[in-house]
Image 1 (cartoon, rainbow, N blue to C red):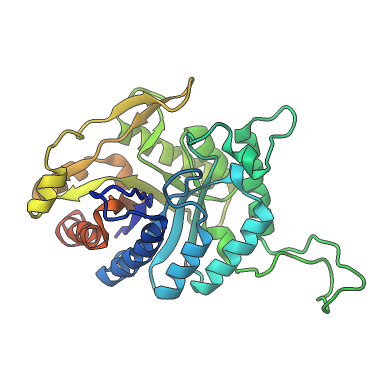
Image 2: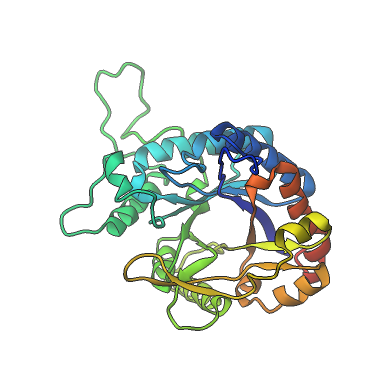
Amino acid sequence: MKKIGFLSFGHWTPSPQSQTRSASDALLQSIDLAVAAEELGADGAYFRVHHFARQLASPFPLLAAVGARTRRIEIGTAVIDMRYENPLYMAEDAGAADIIAGGRLQLGISRGSPEQVIDGWRYFGYEPAEGQTDSDMGRRHAEVLLEVLRGQGFAQPNPRPMFPNPPGQLRIEPHSEGLRDRIWWGAASNATAVWAATLGMNLQSSTLKNDESGLPFHIQQAEQIRAFRDAWKSAGHTREPRVSVSRSIFALIDDRDRAYFGRGNQNEDNIGYIDEKTRAIFGRSYAAEPDILVQELMKDEAIAAADTLLLTVPNQLGVDYNAHVIEAILTHVAPALGWR
């Protein structure tokens, strides 16, 4: 069995070809797709966070709204760029959203990806400490968030408060029990996957990672997962970690599928640079008739190693079509692979 969810970037554009033409469309359709995915039997509704872009940004209002409209499906992010975040304010928002959702939040966080603007986190009021990089700052924000989510008091109470305080030092409220164990780190390298395991975070690995060996993407990703699990075991954590991978997978069922994805020009990995120094490998997409798709996916070592698969969806094609994409995988592909 494998958990299967969707991952939406929430793109919107006023183009006539788009079904998602405004920020309102992107947000409201995201809620509707989560509801539809739950009805279809999917396990997760995940959303990407990008700043300064016509995409989903501040995630917690959306997560809370999805939590209020659904009852079972996991609700998460993949990922929140921690360079932009005040970890204490984030802990309040996350605690509130998780309580609304009844403890279903699965928060993916990370250092972030290449941005729309130069050093965008500076506009949000953040600067790396002297001698540190923005990556160091993002990881430090993550460490503070993890500590705060433990629910231990740390703030000195006012001796003359407006309202009565409980005994001792005060913690961030609302506190949602168990959320600390549902934090995931989006790792682009083996080293950051190991670091995440040491801190007791679950692992999210996307459709790209640093090219560290020249091997095919799915093999490098499987190696990253093994390194993460080895580090988790060495750290002595008592619970089982979770691992997700993201993929673009389309079962060609009808003429719409063939028109959108039947060209077969994305069946190989690609190499590129995500900044001046970092060579990255971008994983292939999968698009084929279900029987062929099953045979191709059986060879993907990273999908086999993960307990959770996130299907990246083309949100601008509309809620109905994206629900069809999810249903096609759940119905025509997942059972043949033993995922259902």
